[in-house]
Length: 53
Image (cartoon, rainbow, N blue to C red; front, side):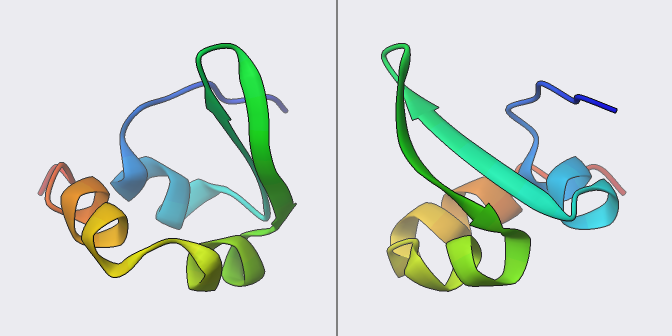
């Protein structure tokens, strides 16, 4: 399944593998845990704050 979303909460719940894109260019990809660890703290916080209850 391919899921395209800006909701990092959905990503955390549903994804095993993550591909990050910016401006139509892939900036990072790999297993969710590995890519999430490479994200700057501010990006993780901003994305996680968009989670829906």
